[in-house]
Structure formats: structure tokens, C-alpha cells
Amino acid sequence: MDPASNQMSQWAQQNKDNSPATLSAGQPVDNLTESMTVGPRGPIVLNDLVLINNLASFDRERVPERVVHAKGSGAFGYFEVTTDYLAQFCRAKMFDKVGKRTPMLARFSQVSLESGSADTVRDPRGFALKFYTEEGNWDMVGNNTPIFFISDPMLFPSLIHVNKRNPVTHLKDPNMKWDFFSLRPESVHQVTRLYHDLGTPDGWRHMDGFGSHTFKNVNSKGEAFFVKYHFRTDQGVKNLPAAKAAEIAGMDPDYATRDLFNAIAEGNCPSWTLYVQVATPEQVKQFPFNPFDVTKVWSEEDYPLKEVGRFTLNKNPTNWHMDIESAAFNPGNLVPGIEPSPDKMLQARLFSYGDTQRYRLGPNHEQLPVNRPLNFPNPNYQKDGPQRVDNQDGKPNYFPNSFNGPGEAPSAAWDVNDTASGNVARYPIDTDHYWQCKAMWDQMTPDEQDRLTTNMAESVKMAAEPIRNRWYGVLEKVDKTYASQVHQKVDQAHKEGNIVGAVTLA
Ligand code: HEM
Image (tube, rainbow, N blue to C red; front, side):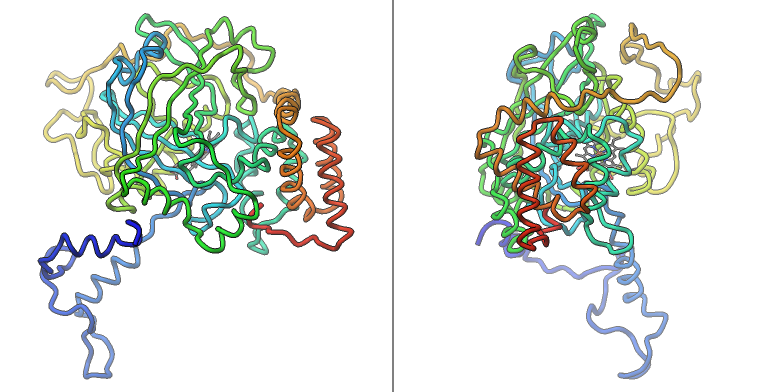
């Protein structure tokens, strides 16, 4: 049997003492199978503390699942610096020496559906990394794609609603999805990538990861740079043909979870190499497009990828609920030298994750073992509240104070030369949505184009005609052949009466 299937027997071999179970407050339990009743068929008595203790615990077993990226798993490992390239642009201590290792956690996920959904659905994949650095935690919460569907965070809840379930039928609804995409043409670049082979990666070990946003890095001289993070899989990129992905979704919906667990358990530890693209503030001013727009990539010719380091995952979770479900990845967890760029999406994410995690896991979720920084218990003036386990001992609970309470670190200040000015208003996004998507289409082989348009037609065919026509209009602005291929395949399906598709898989 593979390691994942064998987990229970392995535990039994290592734990032979069979010690008695206890109530949650530690008292031994006399009986684990029979509730206490009045006579053999009588009602249960309220003083059956064993039953009440067990049910009360069971009744509270779930924390709310993540509102997005609910299905996923992950593993622990380490990041190792392999070049001194980034140290000249970034003062974060985790990059300051070749050979330096930083412990970390990775979680990979599907985006749209529930915690029970299949691992091989067509969806972007989450690529969330938590680095436990000596200066606190840095969370790099990316995806397996360098771009995103939208560039203004105001639209994020709608984007997610159309990709989840219709609120009346509780079904995936192609009308909702294609209505939204066709009304928001900035999505076309990411939608193209989604219906390409890359939309169904072969597990998580065989996909690349991206920070996607542009970030700011600041070096020890206080100079700022703009940076994109790319994590290239050392296992090689492998994708599943659409039919195979659908078959696996039925046969083994936990395919990627199992693959990652078994690979690590067998010592076949996956790794990814970190590369960066770096631009100076002067260079980003010269960009012919908004360099902070997450629907666009930076040219790798103008801004070549430079190697920085590698992370390796070598330890499976030992308690999935505590290690993975309770993990709180937050783009607002930044360390000195790594700052947000003005990307509006990233700015909104700085708020949204901590906010949802205070609801999902509780206000003191950063004290859970998986989220604790290396310097836990870390000194500050925060106290009390539900489930707090470190309460600052006898330290003063106010600042300033004359009793040696924790002080300030002026060197941790963000880019002191940062200037932003302009009228406070709601600004429309840029309208140059098509040219990067066109370049992507042009780089594909005819076979790739054919598979892309087949995959897309499989889903578009289920939307209403006016919505389909609007979508063809968007594709035409990218490339006329692209639009006509999708249009023809949809028409053909309608002619054949073949309009029922694998809705949940597209
Ligand atoms: C305004 C835009 C966005 C908002 C408001 C948003 C919000 C959220 C929320 C509320 C969660 C659940 C977090 C939790 O329960 O722990 C989440 C998870 C996640 N998001 Fe976003 N998101 C946005 C855009 C993005 C983008 C652009 C990316 C990738 C580049 C991304 C990647 C992820 C990942 C990987 C997770 C799962 C983290 C984990 O494994 O726990 N999100 N997002």
C-alpha cells in the first residue's frame, strides 16, 4: 500500500500502549460505546458526562471553510538561498546569505468550489507560502498563474459568486460566469490561460507558482525596486488532458492531495526554484502599460528572470486540521524589505485575509502553532481575547512606559521616499485588455489553440445566446481566428444537440 493509504497501520505500529481515553479535562473514561440510560431501553440521563463531552466536541469540529480556495492541502519544508542576486534589492534577512535556510509551509488549492470538490477541476490553483523568517512571517499568497481575472478589487466578490453556485439552483451556472466574463473583458487573458492545457495541472507538484502582483522591495540603502516573484517547478510542468482530468475527478477526487502526500512520504521531495524580475522606479514609469495591473505580465526579455533560491517540501502535515486547515496565509504578513506595490488588488488583499481569518479561525489565530512566528511569544501590547495562549506575562500593557516594555524598530519603516499624490476619486481601469492575450494566442501551436477552443466551447455552449455573442465579440478583439474557432465549435455542438457539458469541470 502507498504511504497515504497505510497511515493508520503505521501509527498503530509506533503506538502500542493503548492508554485509556480521557474527557477533555483529562479524567479517564470508563466506557466509549454505551450511553447511560434509565434501564436498557430507557432515555438517556443528563448526567452522562462522557456522552455530553463527546457530542459537544463533535458539534464544534468544523471551522468555516475558506470562502475561496477551500479545497487544498500542503506540506512543510525549507527555502534555501542559492544566489546573492536579490540581496542587492531587498534587505529581508532571509535572502542575505547564500546557503541560508528558512523554514516554511506551502498550501496548494483549488479556487472556486467547496472543501469536498475534486482536485482536477478546471480552475486556477492557489500557491500559498508562509516563510517563518527571523524577522517574522512573510506570506507569499500567489496562484499558479502570473495574472488574474480582474484588476479592481471591487469586483472580486462578483467574480467569485459567478464561479461558485447559482443561489437558487445550487448548481454551477455557465450563464452567470460567461455573462460576467463577457461584461468584463479584462478577464480575457486569464480566461484564455484557464481554458488552455495549463488550466488542469497534473497535481500540484507539476505546476509553477507566481506572486502575480508586482511587489516593492527595499534594500539596506533605502532604495526601492519593483519585483515579480516566479516559482518554477523542478519536477517539470505537466498538465492533464481535459478528458483525463474529468475521469480522475470521478475516480480519485483527492488526486493532487494524495500525490503530494505520497511523494513526500516516499522521500521524493518536490522543489521549486525562485526567480525574480526586477525594475527600478524609473523603469516602471516608462512602462507602456500599468506595471501594477495584475491582468498583465512583464516582458521576460526586458526584465529577465534571475535565480534567487529554492524551496523544498520534505515534511507532511502530522495533523491536517491544525497544520493546513488552521493555516492563515495573509498577503499583509510582510517583513522589512518587502512591501506592497500600489496594485489595487494587492492593496485590498492586505485587508481581506486578516479580516476573514479573524472570523474563520478567531481573533488570536496567529497564536495557533502553525501561524506562530519563530520569535513566539513575540512581545507587543496586545492582550486577552478568546483562545489567547500567550498574554505577555508581566510586561507593561501600555506604551510609552518606564518599565522596559517592548520598544520601536525605526529600521522597519516602509520606503521612506514613497510619494503618492492625486485626487481622491473612483478611477476606471485601463482598457488595453487584448494585446497580451493576443501574444499568448500567437505563441501557441495549432494543436494547443485547438484544445483551448474546444475546452472553452464546452463551457460557452451552455450559456444563453446573447451572452455567447458578447463573448465572441471579446475574443474577436484578441484574434479573429480565436473567436471563430470557439463560435464554430459552439454552433456545431448546438447543431448536434450536444449542449450538456461537464458543468462542474469547466
Ligand atoms: C481583491 C482580490 C482578492 C481578495 C479580496 C481575496 C480574498 C481571499 C480570501 C478572503 C481568502 C480566504 C483566506 C482564508 O480564509 O484564510 C483567499 C484565499 C486565497 N487567495 Fe485570495 N483574494 C483576492 C485575490 C487573490 C489573488 C490575485 C491571488 C493570487 C495571486 C489570490 C490567492 C489566494 C490563495 C492562494 C488563497 C488560499 C490561501 C490558503 O491556502 O490558505 N487571491 N483570498
